[in-house]
Length: 417
Image (cartoon, rainbow, N blue to C red; front, side, top):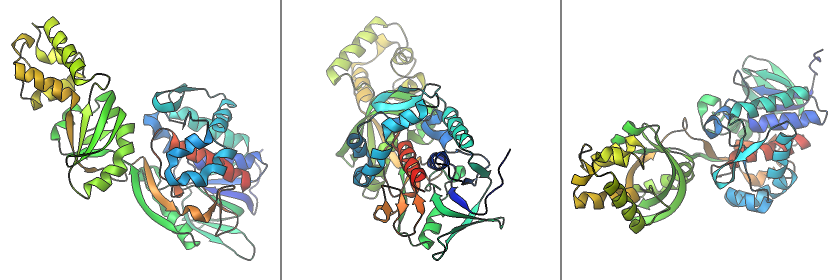
């Protein structure tokens, strides 16, 4: 039998993303009466998109200090939070609900089902198990705090109000606004007295000047080295997966350099140079290509090249080098062989800019970390107000670090509210 709603809830959680769901489930586990408000018509909309729909739940760095090096300056703030509920505790939490993981490159952990829906359903089941009341389609218009009574009043756009002793704000940042992350939480928190650092898009796909990229959208290079240049000066090199889109490039490695690209574009041209065969040096690749061409001397160059790179990319490479794709390999000029090898090791991409908030994976900026007690995730400005996940000014790379921030801050807030 469904319980009647209390006049005053113990805890109201605003935002039904990963941090909000974790916080609500944990508070419910402690026996608190909990109301979870979500503006979308279902919980976990953005969660369904993470990891390309597969959900990169966390990163397998169970040592707290090692894990926190990936959160830059915020790491020193997060130590107590991650000590209470870090990677190991997150894995254990999901394992206790029947979820097992497999590990991919650089420690990324995905559910064995390779489906974000598995994680979303697990969280919803936990909410129901702990008798958390859920209201979807609930658009919050204001958060009010009565200093005398200590109570919070949550006003909805339809005129309804709810009261609580504690409030957890888990409304996210500005990335992917179609999922509900439109940043209104920042205005409420500012009204309550918090300092909001200017929001910027942290992990964003890149747009290219190279118009040919539209011809190879969807093509993935599982492992390549990407070197970032500002003008002719080398800035950074990373190795990983890259995905070509209809306007440019994406993928974990691209996302992780996007904030640096944004800054460099303010000062001049930016180029990415791809090494499609990072395992081989120039000499070794030259030898391998010569052998490949010799063995397949009567075949067309487009078919031979398609054996070592995706066919669509092979055709683009030949087009850029002005090599007729129908040419038999035995007729390939010596200078073209040299250029082909060079291009496979030094494939230039000319960066035009970054896509907007609608394509960003993570936004940086948010509530100043000096205004949070990270032992509880409580506000140092407003008693019994708790802030979690992407509303905090914490920059981090892709690779499971964003969701781990949600699990850790959400769990600790739910343990304290």
